[in-house]
Each structure stands twice: as structure tokens, then as C-alpha cells.
Amino acid sequence: MIDVLYFAWVRERIGVPRERVATTAATVAGLVAELVAREERYALAFSDLAGLRVALDQELASFDAPLAGVREVAFFPPMTGG
Amino acid sequence: MLRLQQAAFDPGAETTGFVARAGAAGAVVTFMGLVRDTGGTLACMEIEHYPGMTERAVAAMMDQARARWHLTAALVIHRHGRLNPGEAIMMVACAALHRAEAFAAAEFLMDYLKSRAPFWKKEIGVGGAEWVAARDADEAALGRW
Image (cartoon, rainbow over all chains, first blue to last red; front, side, top):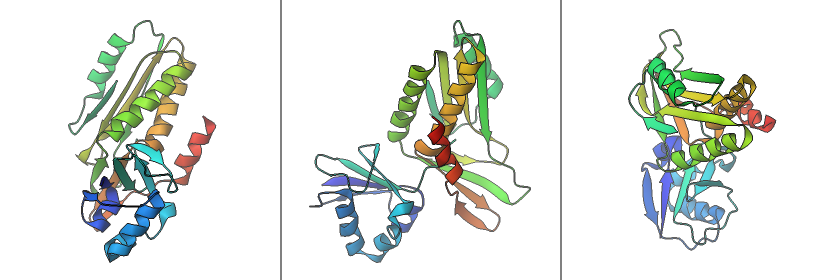
């Protein structure tokens, strides 16, 4: 089980800020594919991966990064701080 | 030093306090980012962040700045929650022996805060709400460092 967090419009499209997910995916992309297969709201949130960012245990990562040992995955749009 | 807070801050008091902690500095640069007042079309701005990652990401960029320039002090204040037009969103202060280092470090921190600190801005307008899109120019600005 891993914690999956969503921020900004990703959170709004999926409808929850975080959830516990049982996954067998080896990579972030694999996890995304599992989520997309669940329900339309996930498909809507993940329709354009180029417009999304991912963090693994609070460090920016890529969609082909492995999930082994990861406790927390976060999906969000490009950041707009400052 | 990093401060994340919902409450407004007093830029004058923060600057005075920062200078008092700046040690042997000969130069202090401060920058403030404000909620743009778009002439009545913006009701307020909501800023969301990723607690935990925000602190890590900003601490890492402040470490990088200190490794690159000889800073006697550095400060980042960033607000989250609901802000009104004209309010200060954030402030960066850098103190160094000479001004070139203080200016460079402040610009470096601003560029990284824009695109690498997990904050997201939503503009609540009179006609609806919209997430602020990241600008390509902000991403490109990281290339100069």
C-alpha cells in the first residue's frame, strides 16, 4: 500500500486530496495506468502526462521511476510558487 | 530560514529583523511578490502547497544558494491560503558582503521558488476560478543557473 496525494486541479478532478492505494505497479507510469483503468475521473486527471509532475517521497521524479520502497507518491500540475 | 504561513507579514518589520541578523553583511537585497490587482476582475487568490515537500524543496534551494554565494543570511517567507489583491504573497531576503552576490542569490531563489517549490495559485475571479498556468519563461529561467 502506498499513499497517493493529489494537488491543485489534479485533486479537484479526482475528488480527494489523498488515498491509500494497493498497487503491484513497478513504476509511476504503471501506477497511473492502474488508476486510469479504475474510473473516468482518473482518466480525466491523467489524460496529459506531459502537463503533470510527480514526486516520490517528496522529491521530484519522472514517470518511468521505479516505485520499489516508495511510501508516498504525489501528482500535481507544474508548480506556480513565488 | 524559511517561514510558511497563512497570516500576512509586515515587510518593514521583516526587513529590519533580517538586517539585525545579517551579521557582517555589506548588502541586503529583498524581493516581495504581490497578488496582482487586475483592476477589479480578481476577487482573491488561493495558494495551495504540499506540506513537507515545500519545506524540503525550499531548504534544498537555500542550501544551494549558500553553497554558491557567500551569504551571511537568507530568508524566505511564503504564504498560503486565501489572499486579497495587493497583498504580499512572499518575500525573499539575501545578505552578503557585496551586492552582486546578494542580487544573484535572491534571483536564484526566486527562479527556483517559481518552478520548483510545490505551490499552486488559483485565481478566484468575478466570472469564476482558474488555476494559474506555469509559464514556459519561468521554467526556461532555471537554465541560466
